[in-house]
Length: 344
Ligand SMILES: [Zn+2]
Image (cartoon, rainbow, N blue to C red; front, side):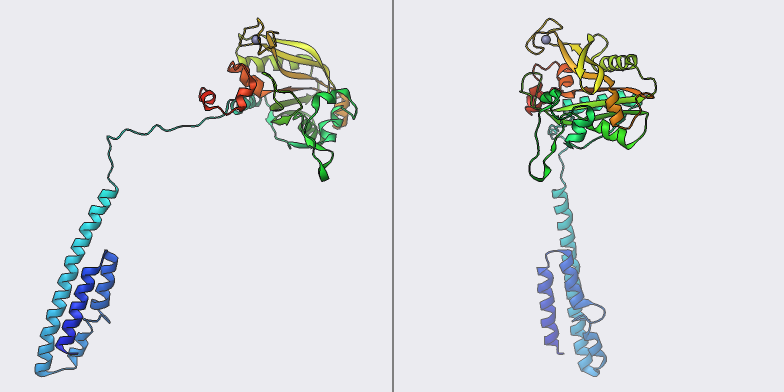
């Protein structure tokens, strides 16, 4: 290598140093030319070892000069790039602590979901377990085992969506009661369960009805369970949900799967019992149906009705939510109108 070669090498190094846009690139340049082993400039030192006399002295001076220039240039470029990086970082991370904060929208549970959660809480404290069942049911569990054989007139009120094709005989459940059946068939008494879930019926939409709605079904089966237990439980639940002041009444009713059957009403919160459009002029709104489990239903579930008795009930959390929040129309709950939902 001659002195001219060395100078050409040094000026190429200086160009690359000037062209390095960040510290990583600069480090690559440094290694290419100045690495302790195999650097393009540093390896010239090995060549010097093979020379002697004036040639060695001459190339040695050239080598020291080139090496010094490149080392200085590397150090200088490094300082510049470090300053750039620090400055750029600060610009990116700049934060104006006096800037007003954007309003953060916080979501919350839908009024129906919240009502179901509260019903679950009330019954959990009474020793009930909340269980979930399938939304698509067969005729056997939805009707027949619950004392509603084909042609039973009570099925009229339970018209629903029927599945076709390979799924003939299957339907969208009309109540969550099939899960009571499934629970009893799978276990042994005592039973204390509630079954929240979605159900469907051929109801014409009006202020208190919607074809798809929610239900919380409950079942208590044990030895010596009486109508008094049912009445006490329902009154307790109504007081928990609506407060001690709201009027509650029980009246007799009919369901094929309970005997005797009772319905519970609460005073209409819109008109306070006077009668209005929301309560169909009655002053009261039905919130649940209930009764003592029919002995035939217990037998269908493999429970001996001579040893065990029990009560069952089904309540509509949609209607209960509308009542608690004094909504005029239960359908308002499904409109997804943020102006309404933000009120809760
Ligand atoms: Zn009313």
